[in-house]
Length: 326
Length: 267
Image (cartoon, rainbow over all chains, first blue to last red):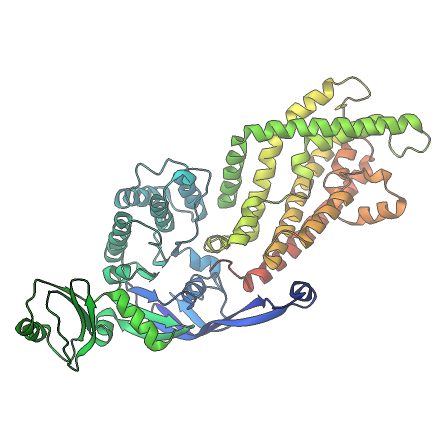
């Protein structure tokens, strides 16, 4: 039995549907029509203790819904979830004292008061002993660089500062599992780096299991060895990131700055575009080595400058979404 | 228990920060107190034959209503809780190892009590200093005072659980407008805050006596001014306790139902 075991879970939402046409508002006042949306369709996976898993998928794929089921907030229509021997939505109060959750789009801090007051409230809520609380708090203040912002009312903080406080708030009670739902949304480069480094350290030092959803593939690259890709509520891929790259990341863009004009026809050239001061090739590196292609190129034209785009994980995901039609 | 108490503490300290709001509250309460009393004085002067309640008792009763208004009125909406439901931030509430029902009850009670603490004393002092027949008369016997204190504590709790029930209904409607507002207005009338219960036609008096609403302000304050005999007061306290238990049970059941099929707004 794995640490986190998810088996065949389903969740359907009922949403009111708006009708078109005249008097539709009046009609729907008396007889409202509903539409059923399957947010999650038969999802299963298991996660070992101490893993960092990136949970990715396009908007509306069911990522947040899954996180909410795993953190005991939503109840699935069918299927089983067992985490650390507990069923999240059945033993909610017992279970949640061992997890930390960060919803990037929401706030758990009290708006009108400094973050430290919210932290003190959380200390009482989770019944954290004094010494443990002080130790955790000092560690978090140092690692997340909170010293200057912790005494300012939350409403006056920038998004990045607030997010760091939010993450600290979720970790005061040293949870065994950390759920991060888009933790880097809207953050600048420095804040992103602080958050990523921190998550890595936390995972290494305290063996915290981390499940992370994000649209920023740099997060995944920096943190998660394993990814689970879902689309339209189903698991499409579950495995390592490097494996995925091998299978999907085979196109390279080569920009050549040149005054010459040529047309090359080879089976490995996917695309050739003339740009303002040169040519842009897209080649398939499964079929040809880049060095061979450059040799061929330099024998035909004079190259002033060359730029090889080394495969972008965002493109990979776009291609993946396209392939799965999600 | 300590963790619920800290919600209460926090709400209380936040509430105490808003001094301007308290000042506005005090002036509103004094203004409304005076308007009500002037109307009733005029009414009593024109026809004193069919009065259900002596004027001095009525005046003191109205002042007590105004002084403790923050603890007794029923169309109260806790902005935080409503926002939690509307924006979906309730997700965080559910990640806490706590009973959401008790958590929300302590939030509501904390805010209402902090409002009342800042406001009641100035209103009472000013009302006592007014010339007769407009003044508040606080004289009371000791046994009556003891029964009043018990009934007043119970009425504040009853108010909390009743208001909380409206907020739980919002979990189903996902908005506080509509049905919840109707409930709030009806309960406000039946609580005797708009028109004291003795002025109701007998039929409506009977209805009001069965429902919990009048046990929140009408019962403890009329008990204080001596309009309700002590024996009836003890019975009233039993009714308060019964209603409190009923409201808690209904609230807990509804809450459980709502959370089982919770929809978190906004993804």
